[in-house]
Image 1 (tube, rainbow, N blue to C red):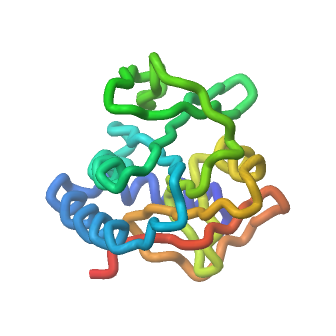
Image 2 (cartoon, helix red, strand yellow):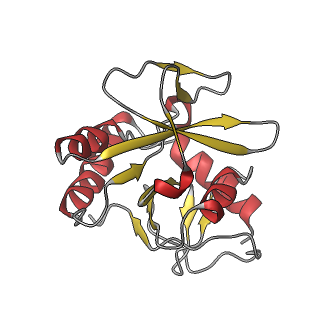
Image 3 (cartoon, rainbow, N blue to C red):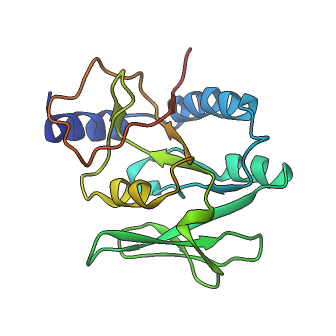
Length: 183
């Protein structure tokens, strides 16, 4: 299937998940994240969940990483040119929802994309080669192409990868790992 078909299917599947099911799926995802070896990374970029899209709640992961002494980095979206700017997410950082329901920092220190060691990437579905389907605006494809060559990438998803995505192109960026519920 192509990305548009997959996007439609997996948005609908996610929308149909009950709160109880989401809780169980997230519990499995968190356990895998908490077992990951973060010893070689210090600056970790993570997406903040869009609640109305039923995205994975990343706040428990953020708390875990902060307790490990890691710097957490989040982004603001520029919908005019589909780019992200990155900010240090400290405990005192104030968040506000943009018009799309995305939590963004209000009073944070901007950081260079080149300091990021690891990126947690949102997605709707991935394939067995760890290519992803997102919402289709290209924010993360642009962002990841600007990161340093050694950046680690981990996708977080509710669903097991599919066999393949039909319409990959030169701008698609394969992830190094995709974490999804194993149970």
